Amino acid sequence: MGTNTLLGQALTLKNGSTIPNRFAKSALSETLGTVDLRVSKALPTLYQRWAKGGVGLSFTGNVMIDRRHLGEPNNVVLEDDRDMPMLKAWATAAKSNGGQVWMQLNHPGKQTPKMLNSDPMAPSAIAFHKSMQSFFGTPRAMTEDDILDAIQRFGKAAGLAKEAGFDGVQIHGAHGYLVSQFLSPHHNQRNDQWGGPLENRMRFVQ
Image 1 (tube, rainbow, N blue to C red):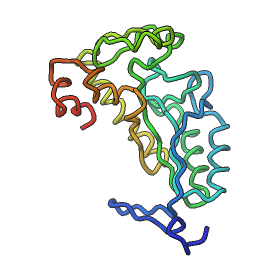
Image 2 (image 1 turned 180 degrees about the horizontal axis):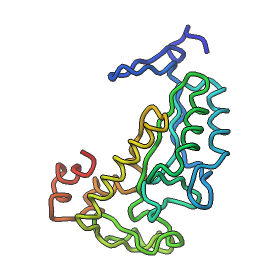
Image 3 (image 1 turned 120 degrees about the horizontal axis):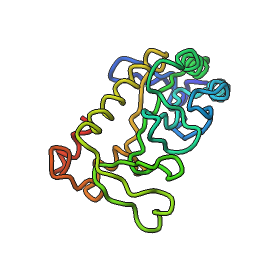
């Protein structure tokens, strides 16, 4: 890719890491995990094709941190190192043309389909709008242990992604998933250190 335009020029981040150009593939949920929620051969193949196209930075889509809480079927779940060889193959393929790859990590909170999860949880036991209740169940409020476990899982998954060769992680904080639920004064109506004022609602991601 030529460097005679701004989009083709390298971008150095504040941490000193350099992305070779300004083209990025945003995160999307590929749903290409195996039936047992592991990395399939299709993922390295797909990301190698994107790399061949010259993208400077690829974000993976929607890797879950807890197999009990899925966003959709065929998510990839990263809880431990059982899939490390395929994770390394995925990262290597995505970086095969000199670009970077960052893993998007997610927990759906209550935005998990009923068919996948009979015990959804969220900051508060507040159901979605009635138009969505046929698809998403009413959650239970997370306990302190649930919250600390989710935070620990995000950290562990990030460490495993680094070990596998991913250059960074993106914490999914939008689209109604768990991080978004904590930040929202509607979905988070707790009266402890995790709810109420903005600084408390932000505590989950700090």
